[in-house]
Length: 387
Image (tube, rainbow, N blue to C red; front, side, top):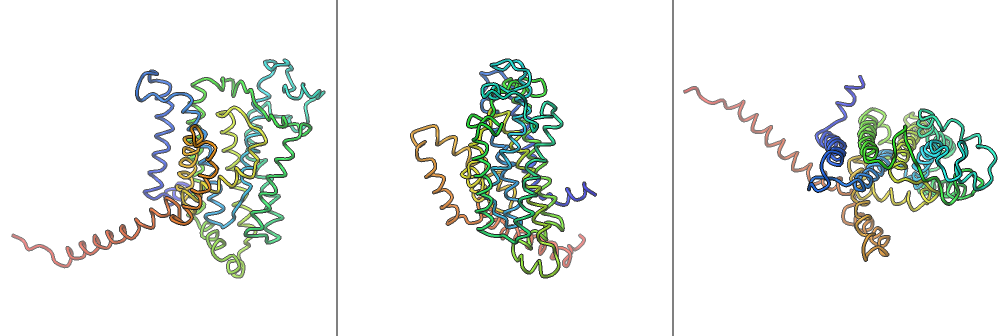
């Protein structure tokens, strides 16, 4: 039944997207590991890590598009769920350092020794085990989203008010994680990672494997989103987005649908954050900054809200532009360029890149199908005479 649902939810564009992501997940690591450095097809290790970061951002963009593009929930605090997943993975990586830290303490991370902590806080227990860390990567963001959504959606907070509350939530977490007594490294965060599952995080093979794993996670996240939006659940979500009061009036429990999709989206964002941390090498409170969440929404708007593929494409395009323009003379003006990009897309391409392409392509496709159908009917009504 699940196979049938996934097959039914995939059209030609979705299948092409999955093939491209799978090809990148295979070919880029192989070109990095197998080809010599002088080869024109060799991908340097730093690019593998950089593109791996883009893939993680694409997963985050998918999670936002799922709730904003298909349910009308504009969250300006999804960076909080991304950061929480990153911190959960960072705590596991810190526990793996052991006696190789600066202070050589086998239990306490270096920043705790520096701050004269006498014992490990209770909420750090279990993070020396990878399965437990994976569980927390999904559970912590999902639980926060569930608790937040339970109160917000049942109070019928919607629109700009919900967006402001989500931004306040991530800002509150930002202030909390900045404190040294919070137990997460304060302003410096968590860094100086050594191993993941016994493999050196700086090794080329590890970075290539993390990139391939990120591509696999993007494929799985995309399939989950497509399965949701193509099902009856997805139709209800679209109805809530377009006419919430009418959907509630005909008997649907709108709050339950919102709560489910919001929690699912937060867990996806947590997975993206967990994959992001070992590839970047650090996680600190700046990831909670409200500006990061707003920027992620811009990715979705640029790529195309309510398209999924556009959200992932927008994340890659905008972040590539950010990398390109922040490394030259235009670096001080990057934020102005990002704002201008959002304004221009809103005015000239209100449906985003993919949404605008679809609106141009659909009439042409419909005309071709009509012509093909007419040609088949003519062929049937007027068969050729036998010679």
